[in-house]
Length: 579
Image 1 (cartoon, rainbow, N blue to C red):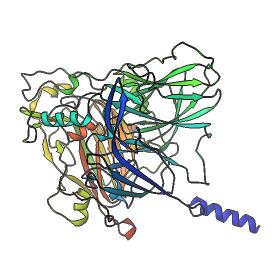
Image 2 (image 1 turned 135 degrees about the vertical axis):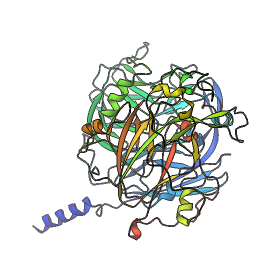
Image 3 (image 1 turned 120 degrees about the horizontal axis):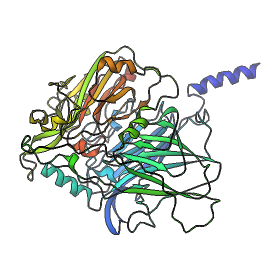
Image 4 (image 1 turned 30 degrees about the vertical axis):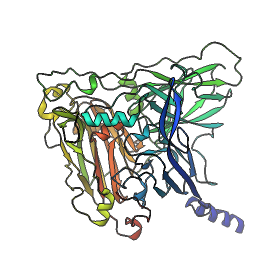
């Protein structure tokens, strides 16, 4: 009886995390330039520890992490730990000029944070300029050591798949040219799987990732879209996948042969090796949600044709899945049937059919309601855009195109009460209501021009928030992946057209909605998210199409301190970077 009582007591302690000792996981990231050869030519890229993609960080739930970033590159750098809540460690979140100034060349900064209440697939990436084109890697959070396993049968093996983009030209040069001219960022030349282009591209037979499987066994694929600007359809010939998690939150098992994944999100999917032993292509190709909208230069004299009329990278990257028992063959691997690049019904079916594995604590009483219309627009050329003529392409939320500060981070300004860095008047709704999802607004210049500003939405600690995210068709209608730092949120509804409160609420899922840190808001449509503001600090919400972030598609939540020391933002660390 005494032994049973001890076992029960220890089981309770384990449940609350006291019987299993958490670890300190330490890494050193040396950021530097490196020469690589891809697509028939040598090219210098920025990498971490000489690896492309960068090193994988693996920790258990409950562990503490300390990652020293040493900047040996010629560029400013900061690292964001995508999806980590950073509770009481907002100084480690990483977005440039939001929670820190960049780490300048020759200097270093140690990011220290805990991973509590999270498990699954996340990732890390540069959060300054366009360096995350090559500066990124996986961040895997395993279940707490010695406590529980996965809520599904343990796989035979796990495989991380990082999807990316590749440019023949230098991405920093391309970005500088786009910013100077007020134009859109150049499309990529190729796509990658784990840094390899795949054998469908020239000079890339040796640059094809391979996954070997055994007949009858299952494999957990941790899929991460690390691309700068491209949403993907992901398929494996001859196999279906069972989605079991998204953004490090478990989902009800969802069987599919096509995964849609925007830049930023992660998907965990089980692969069952139950097909005929052979070689199969693993493929990733563009989901280009933006149709070419008719553009009338006479009716809209503000700019050249909108970015939606530009071509996109219509190529396919592949890896090879091969069975150990398959006989040698000179035949090429089997290619899966691929969706059309603009197959929005398939993408929406995937995005809208994920639900949480268990009922979750969706806020039912709402303190703050916001309606945020967002998309592309125009702003007058500035003196910093010498190649710009008339107006430049911009992006905005509620018609505010976000301007990053340059002299101090917003979090430090908040903590030290420095005035003049930002204002607390981000509007709860658009100043002007219009037919948001109607492509004809593309020709109406009054809806195209945006205002510049550094504005935040102030929230009290523990307030509940509902945000209606309304996509607009100004200049271009497309699917935008919006990422919120510091939080997960519940996606309670999504749909097409203009949000209609009465109709939409009939379909709200307030029981087991998917829990995400990034929502791909449907092209020409909307999504409704809810969260509880229980994490003090400054948290940016922005489009994870990198070209749109630099154009101003962002806003910031300022969440106040709670009533106790454990809910109050602590001072910045001693090695905190300064501007």
